[in-house]
Image 1 (cartoon, one colour):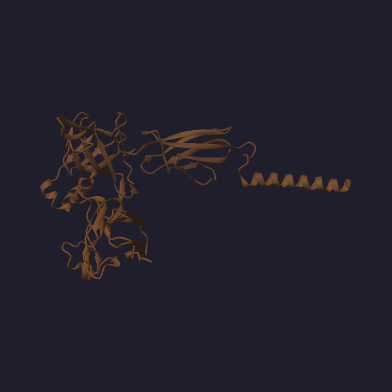
Image 2 (cartoon, rainbow, N blue to C red):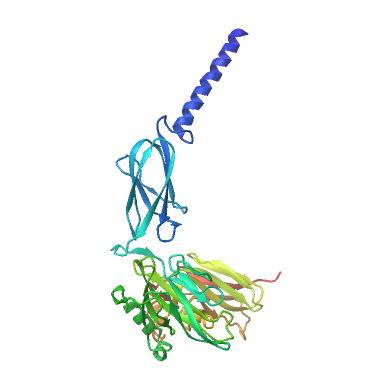
Length: 401
């Protein structure tokens, strides 16, 4: 009995040793004696916000470079002695900081925007924004938010009120210049608006005084400098000053930093079928066939894109054209939107409809389309979606049992 007890105790002790060794080897345990864990938080110096995607390096150590998470943080274990931490990120001036690892430490490294950074950051599409008297007339471009409270804003919405009407709507507390386009021509030709917008470059920026008011008109292009020194280009989409607008005075616009570059065509994210009773059925866009099965007649169909765009080519339905357009004055424009709709009529079909199919047409089909530019959708920077990311859309009438 004693021998069996000793054997069991020996096995138990050996097991404890193995578990202890594995705990140290597999991580999640403590650092090696004399080494410590370092947590680094990287912030945008101007905004005080976490900087995601910054690269952090422990200089001179054989450790993999790490990328900060959404909280702007990375951590390294097993460190000791005096170290140098190097942090860099596209669009910011690199920064280093020394630290002595004699215990677990947490440090913060702040990065300053580099206005002369020659390497533009690639992004997908400009951002859409609204500033208004009621919902927020102060705006910060990097935060992408409007506020009713003054702070680190890059511009402020201004207006002159006459009774229930708002006129001379514009921006102040900003630093930049406005470029106007002939509105009469613009409403007839969206390409004129975009040609004008694309032609304005960073070299066209001029400084203005903070108390100068930039009075706005639809389809104006502006170049402003943010309070962190970055240049940003805006396209004014709509100005609302009539008393019938709930948020007047208000301005809708899209903007893109000039240290960024947009090289990606717009993406079709989803397609929505609307039935005659206004029921909406949404499907994600994917390769192959996108099917809908409904018990009533279809009324319309619309695409949702990932950015503001404009459209050109229609789809084909039994040899006829199905043309898409923005919902009525969506974003204040008859041309630009992130949604494009088309009617799907089955009225008077004999025999009654059972299937409706929408596809891209062939080149012979588009030969009869006036002003064919060869693309379905294009963004404001001229990146074109020339091939649909699906084979066809099929709408079926549900068979009654």
